[in-house]
Amino acid sequence: MIINRKKNNIRLTSPKPWLYSGVILAFLLAGCATISVYDPTSYKNATDLKAESLLVIQKATDAADKHTAEINQVRIELQKNFEYENGKGKLNSLTVRQWQLLLDPNGNLLAGLLKKWEAQNKGFSQAFVDGVSKNISDAFDEIIRLEQHKVKK
Image (cartoon, rainbow, N blue to C red; front, side, top):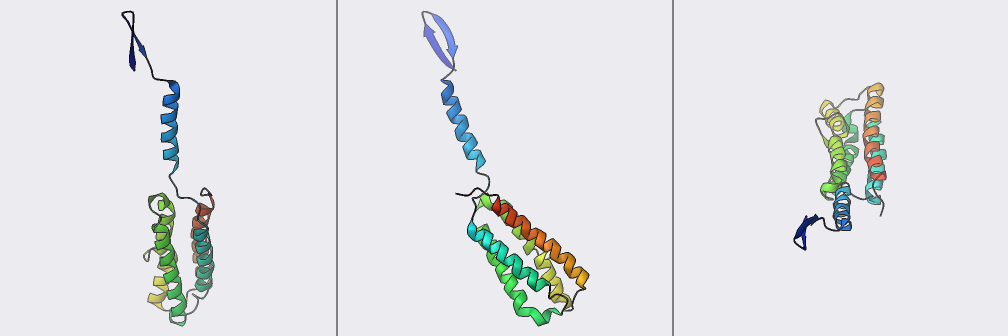
């Protein structure tokens, strides 16, 4: 509030309304930046790794030692994608969290399946492979959808 003294009368007036509007607009714009912008490299990485992973998973009816090189390649690509996304900072935390779910060796998604497959070194039933493939595919789809809905520059 501003005190306006005129002819011994004290009148309280407020600053110009446009000043408040400008300050509020600045805070709103700053608050809208809660997610990173669209990155075509992120989109390509996620779609490529999804396809590669699902192809390797379909081989999980065999013993893991028959596919060691492919399993290791998927692990490397998974870690590379995580590091790329993690390097974008706080505004990319939702995407990073999705990659962490895929990377969790004790979880029920990609890294967890690879760990279990190698530990048992025997093939899984086709029904199990089909079910886990759907879950992993859905997890990749979440990452892909999240990227698609980011603001494009």
